[in-house]
Image (cartoon, rainbow, N blue to C red):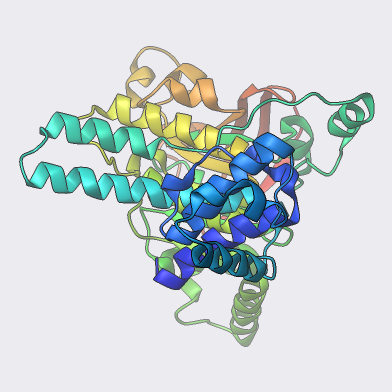
Length: 414
């Protein structure tokens, strides 16, 4: 982060306090989280001023807080600086975002200090890893508040929090809401990525959508998205056989370009994912797709796969609650269960961690019976199984999956 950007965040945070002093109730940081010495002092005075008088104001500083300054000149320069702060462009609605940015920056600085200590043999590797884990877990923890009757009614009766998409039956029965963590699981080769891309292609008409795909190239992702949108099979994208196909492909490219889609295909850690979520969800409610949880890299060495995925899923659920986002996270089904009974997946078959079931708002599993019978049809019947659902019903809906153009469509109801 550049120096000017660092200071701008600090100034925006402090300007919010001058504009809306009641935001002081949400402060969970202190002056240690600031780089600039003037901003450190401002933070100290603002907190003390609010504690004593329930205000944050330039007025009264000269009378009540002279002890913070070495001389009159320093005091006058500080008051002039606060006058400039009052004109800083800030958004009080983004106060938590400013504060979270300061927290992450502070955490990064402390981590680098610990790494330096380790390089100087001042701490052990175990102490370094413990410190890194501690600082990475820093996040905003807001206190609970009491709601009045009208606020409670508004909260429980809001209809615009439902995530609506073009699979009408699944939309009705799954009843996915904003801030949910939804697990989409299947065995390899069944079509979970294709299913997720169908959701993304549709939801990006309304929502800002970000895809973290750690298995495919950007070209492969966009080929699938254009195929879904245009209904033209992917193998015609290089050499369309007819003018109609070429026109449909170009039209599909145009449609996809107008949607709110970002595709990130590089390797990711939970920390880098979290950073992107903070940035995007500060603008508007954003839907994130992660393909898939098992490929998220660990920042702590020597943890088992189970421990790694458990911590990642816990973190994803907390992120979905803390920020303006909804998360669809792909996961794999354990193959070993197939030997013991029928092939249809169950919640207990989720691979790598039981936390997937525990933290998820909904678990949606895909099953293709023809896959086990050696079927290689262009269009396969896929059972989309709602195995867990805090918001609605469980059961299954039968879909048709056209592998050539990656298109999913509902076949019949429960």
